Length: 390
Image (cartoon, rainbow, N blue to C red; front, top):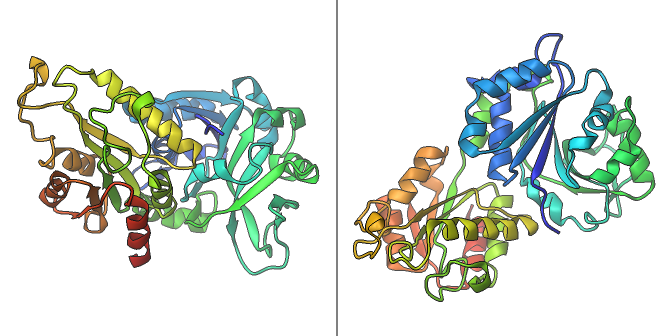
């Protein structure tokens, strides 16, 4: 099943004057964090549904540079006082066939794409991210299906984590005034059309005064995480020489699983790859970028993703003058790694460069991070060993 590209965010007011997206968390609007997360998981379209305060959400978007920098397509729909289900109903004409739904008050730090691979998600109308909240006796799961939801989840063992994978079929169950949780999802569950995944990760709800008090420090800290820098040819795919088309690309055994395991374990995953075929006139940068988009599409269907990619199109002996250069980004130099370190909040001391050649290890050492040379086809076993070591 292909992963959706649309992320729908419900924005409700914290009070009469303040939509949650406008609230400053750690010196920037909470909206910025939602956009950054959507982008790194590969969602290219974001639809904000504003229950009041739509004009301020738009103003916040205008003040943010995130959408411009990430090339996200962003829309805002007003849905005054219609309830969570009614808000979706108001936006029904803007919904993709499959989309991710977020509560604009909440941060749930887990691999959102893992919902795509939940058993039965393809047939379900809703697949919910669930979180453990205690040791109560009222679980929300039975045989893999969510069978009960309640507005008051105190005393329950598992609660809705405010992240859901939905299909447009949900529109059939919506009305202009309804609650998504207590009306729509309950009906769907009774018909066996809801699935759930208990995800582990930090959950913060800025509508909760206690969570809001710590969010300014906690949310930026959650974004700072270790990274795995991966070579491409010979590490993720068979190195048959200047691979630049999907038709010629063959994943190495276990490579996609390795990326998924890293995603699930909270690592950033980056690709850093020399692509001297551009300098040699064999293909252009557009072909490189298109192949990388295809790679991420393949990974997203498997519940995985690459957060960001850097490639070097240069070579000192290139036949294309514009790319004939001995640059600082070409491995064994560290330029691509250093650029990513400058762009992302990375825990460098816990990060690793993984490749199949000496130049990969040399680049990692030059960036002052741990490096490993892993033979083709051995990435998954190396990652498992790395994760066991913590």
